[in-house]
Image (cartoon, rainbow, N blue to C red):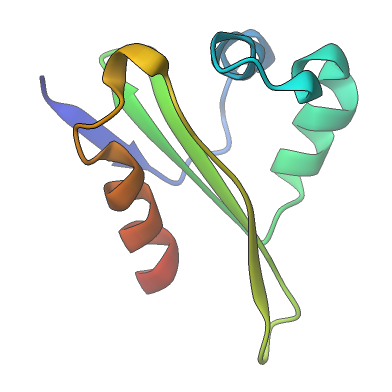
Length: 94
């Protein structure tokens, strides 16, 4: 398993929705709002196994003192492999 961590925002919305559905997050029921929220986050970090989106995290910040990490998801089949830590590490180091 070679997981690639990325900061690209060129993500097909259906890949994001599939990840949220796999994790049972109700945000998947509002795909347009979810996609727009993620695309406008201060930071967006994703994890990929080939062309499969397997993890995602985002951050909202005031740019000075406060950072809030509202979403961190890893596909259930990829959990407990350190992917969430890889995403958080990238968000913290930017």
